[in-house]
Length: 180
Image (cartoon, rainbow, N blue to C red):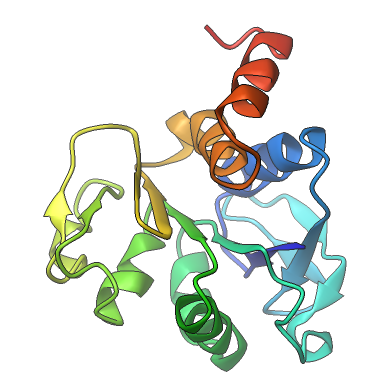
């Protein structure tokens, strides 16, 4: 199970593109509304979450969690005790975490990027405490995949597929969606 956290002000493309790629790869993806069942993105698009954070009481089925960026979505995610607990659970149990745009700052604030290569939206580098700032659009270092922003959302999704399903499945999807 992949849990994608949505909070008011999330960047729509950064959530929907990875959800799409992961579902195309056959992964079960559940969207979790941090700020309610209907979550409004940073560009005014309302999305109905599969469940609310109050309904996510057990992380044992998690294969991965994904944190979309956007403002104030990232701040709303970071303020959530459920999101914080999910991150901790993943790190304690060697479960991958994906974060894009401003959301890698949440991991940086927790000290989880120390010595890891990571990327983020321009201007958030100072929040990636201890990270080696990469130059690629998407970077996986250990259990953590980070990405710069909406412009690489499909690449981010394909990288998450690679993490969970392998390079061959990521390549198959890349070809199927005509992503050169």
